[in-house]
Image 1 (cartoon, rainbow, N blue to C red):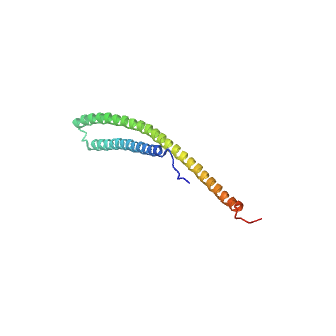
Image 2 (image 1 turned 60 degrees about the vertical axis):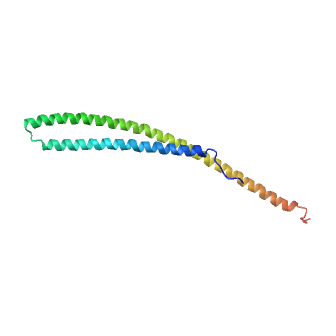
Image 3 (image 1 turned 90 degrees about the vertical axis):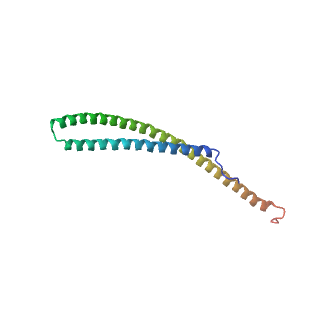
Length: 145
């Protein structure tokens, strides 16, 4: 009996590596979003700290209002960046799912081919066993008459 060999093994390995690359890209995209969210939280904390530290003199109120406007612009920029990250994450998830699907498709094909190979081997073994059994009964040295 010959050994089982899946002709598309290299393609399957390539698909597996592609899925791993896409998953790594998804992790990076998620890290980007986490960083934006961390920056948003730090900005909010810093704004709260500055607001509490303000002495409420006219000069401080003007400075605080200018700072508040700047924080609002930064927050809007960070919200836009977060939305963009979420869009890229959604797109990357689709790529990951597609890469995994292609890999699983080759896995299931390999499994079917392995089952076919196993059935062929079993059939071949059965034929050999039958021939050996029949050979014992039909050999010229057999004196069972």
